[in-house]
Image (cartoon, rainbow, N blue to C red):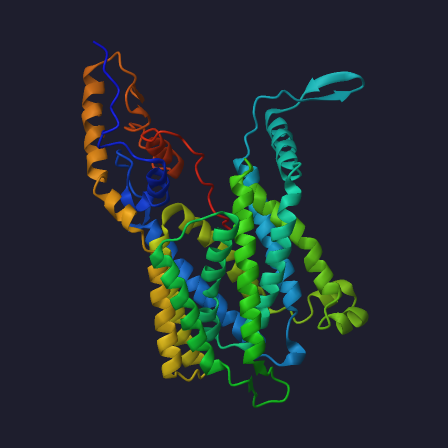
Length: 460
C-alpha cells in the first residue's frame, strides 16, 4: 500500500519564513544531518581564527590610517585618493584571479587557422583561451552597468574614511563608524523590504544614542598640534565625514545585495565589475584633488600620483585588502552573532591602542557611549524569538533523518538521496555542509522553495 503524504498537522513541517530564518542561521543550528569535520587550523576552528583576525584587522586599520594621517608632517602626507585607487586595483586583481580560478571551461572545442588549415590547440592553451573568453563575457555582461552606482558610492565612502580618520581619534572613529549598522538597516527596510524585530529597532536607537555620547568628548572643536607643520584635527569635520561614510556604505551595501539577489552573476565577477567601475571616479578625484595638484606639475603625473607614498601608505592599503579576504572567510565559516563579538573586540582594541599610542584621554561619556554601542551591536545580532523556538525542533528533524536513513539502508529500491514524502536532500549522505545544500534541505520541508540568498560581498 503506498504511503500517504503527511497532513497539515505534521509536526516536522517548516513554513517558508521559518526556512529562510533557519537558512540564515544555519551555522548556529548545524542543520546538516551528516557530521563532517569542522575546518580547523592547528586544532582551532577556522571561524574563530577568522573572527579574531577580522577584529585585529579592523583595529589595526583604524590605528594605521589615523597615525599615517595625523602623525606625519603635512608636507610628507600621501594622497588619500591614490590610496583609494590602489585599494581598488589590488581588490580587483585578487577578485579577477579568484574568478578566473572558479570559472568552468566546458567542453567547447577550439582550433586555430594557419594557411587556411585548422589545427587543434593544445589542451593547456585551449583551456586558457576558453576560460579567458568566458570570464570576459561574464565581466562585461549586459547588466554590468548596475555595478556603477555602488562603485561610485564605495569610492566616496573610502575617501570619507580618510577624512574621518584624519580628524577623529582612532577609538572615536571606530565607535562612530558603527552607525553603518543603522544606515544599512534603514536602507534594507526601504529597498529590500526587510522586517526588523522589535529588539533590533531598540538596538538601533541605543546605537544612535551611544554614538551621540561618544561625540560629546570629541565635539569640543579643533585639536591643535605641537608643531605648525603637523595636521590639526577638526572633530566636527570628522563626525560629518563618518556620518556621510556610513550613509554611502549602507546604501552601497544594500544596492549591491539587490544586484546579487536579482542576478546569477558570480560574487567574484561582481567584485571585478565593482573595481572596474571604481577606477574612473578614483582617477577623477585624483585629477581634481588639491593635495596632488602641485606635485603633478613638477614631478609628472605618475610620480606625483605616488608622492610620499611610503611605508605607512602601503600598510594602510594592504591592511584594507587583507580585510576583504578575512571578511570572505567570516562569511564562509562564521555567523552574525560571532561577527558582533568581533566588532566589539576591535572597538576595545582600538580604545586600548589609542590610550597607549596617541595619549587618548578617557572620559565617562566615552566609556558610557562605547558601552551602549557595544550592547546595541550585540542586541542587533541576536536571533529572534521565533528562531530560538525553532532550535527546539532541530533535534526532531535530525531524529526524523536518522529514521529515514535506516529505512533507506534496509530498502535497496529506495533512492539514497530522495524521499517520496519529505523530498530531496533532507538526509544527506554526502557530508556536504554548504549553506546552499542545507537550504535546499529546509526548502524541501516547506511548501515552496525560494532561491537561496547569495553570499554577501567579500572584498567590500
